[in-house]
Image (cartoon, rainbow, N blue to C red; front, side, top):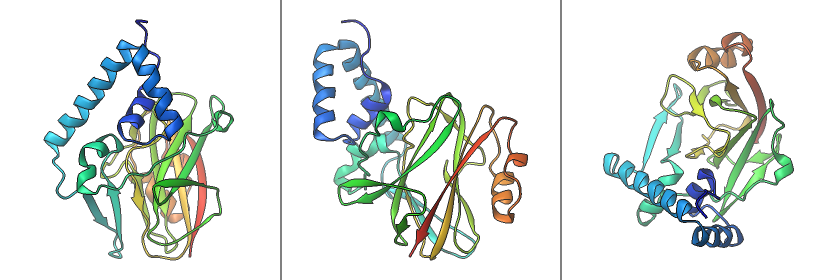
Length: 236
């Protein structure tokens, strides 16, 4: 068979050892029957190796501090995990979502996963988490665009959880809804507001963060047609 059978998002999760045993077996069987998918897997593996050549692990994480000097932790992209596992990089294993959980075309949803041992737990809005918990995000939308995940913590500090270290929203591919990296919550206790945004055009994060901090209108700080979804966690 000449055509591709496996989406890149699944191949990346396979490389990242981010699949359960049953899904891993299905991917491996499909790879046996699909030279095109094997070739694409080799390309993704080479991309990961090139990434590590340009960005060698040491340190493995980039830290940043808010104005109150509370530290959060952003991990390296998930596709690099297999190549640095020996260096103890933390990888969140996320079970594939149920098909009926996906947002309808034109809608946006935010899924948050909590690391629990070697696997992860999907959190509903209002769920309780411990300060310092490690989270990973999945943004589901009906089409491509630009995306960001922002936070307003219990004391009113705002942060861009995704994309980390950028002034602009990141290009979003609906075929790869699981965002790379993970975030470690700070030590403040109370409600943390998480906001996922997907827009058709690229947008700056600073005006949106300011609106989130002051309680202003997020839509006024975003391009026309941008879609926003929120989720609240309680840190205690």
